[in-house]
Length: 146
Image (cartoon, rainbow, N blue to C red):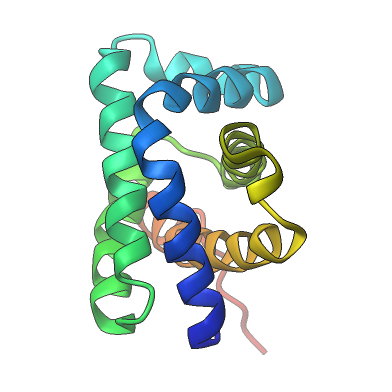
């Protein structure tokens, strides 16, 4: 990501963060609507705590966008954890759609096409690392041989 796009994500997050607690509920509602199978992963979770952790984690990752070493290090930990929870590759796609939908719902017209594009790039980067680590953790990665 360019520094300008990273800054756009950070600026958008600053506007979203005061609304994060109330909108985290909408994130999970949308995720469960898009991918009903994900709901089973949260059957035993305290959803108030889960929603708080989600938004806290996104906030942390947003601050780390310009620090690749720290970002990747934290994503490795998150990817392993999510692999252990049984998160599937397709779950990352649904979560990305739910995230963008939640940001748009919370920010309205402030969530411009440029902001959506920057967030899409940021989430794609995050999800790509987590997917790879999760696949290695669960043994579902494919080894290509020639």
